[in-house]
Image (cartoon, rainbow, N blue to C red; front, side, top):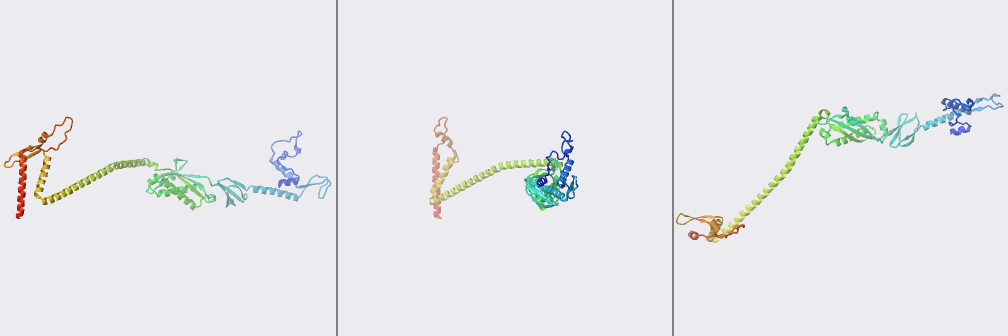
Length: 430
């Protein structure tokens, strides 16, 4: 629009004009050059601009004179209407530049917060946006995708400790030294900008408060060893509850435990206690291994003894039952024929005795002389010769008794029959 107005009034208004800003042509030197030919002077540019605007919005006097004109002169008379039009053009240009200043660009992963006279108005997404220019509205760019980190108990390195932040009390009244880091993002840019004054310090204080509460509910051994992950998880959950309660626009993403240890003043004693505990566990494991080796053996031996005793009991019981059954059978036969059964029992008994005895002493009837029967020598004499290098097999040899022994056995049988007959007669007499 401005260019069309300039063309309408026939004014050449271009920064590309080599003579613009360097004065009129009357200042040229005879050689065609202007004095101080160089970069344009800003003051001279402004004077040339005002002069050309004056030439544009003033009427030229004609040569033959006219209404309100000076005869024979070549000056200009001011025209209020033309001056008003020029002021309007300038105002339009300034207004256009002012409106253009309201455009702004929001990068991906960021959010624009627009303020109207310092009060929150709305948020803008990523891209090319426009707001009312200053002083009506202003904006602030907030990076909501950036992962921010807060360190508690140390700065930069775990060796650079901050004791006023890291020392805390456990449930069993022990002091523990903890360093950890908190990572978080933003989920609401307006809450982050307007509900917090020092955002990083606020998150650090929330983290310190949460970790002290969680550690105060647990014992020292749990915090030092098996409970690190649980401590970090509980701290993250408690921090999220606190920042949501105060509407800070923060999203806790991770809590990382950098170092958990006793205070430096008691570190040596604590290491000794840990070594003693490890030695105790080692000895317990060795004792358990020995018990695992001995106890199964003892149980196996006990089981074997129990089984052997059960087998012996079963054997003795079966033998006793067999003897009782055999005795009952003999009793039945004895009741049928007492004399025959008694003789048979006597002969069987003597046979068992002689089969296991190598020496027999016989008391002769009528005198007190004892007869010695060397059965072992008799058996060895009657045994066949065994070739050298072979093992003699025991043979069932029936010893040949002397005549006295045969007579003795016959006499014993007669005495037995006599006793049986006497017993029978006594029974009949009764």
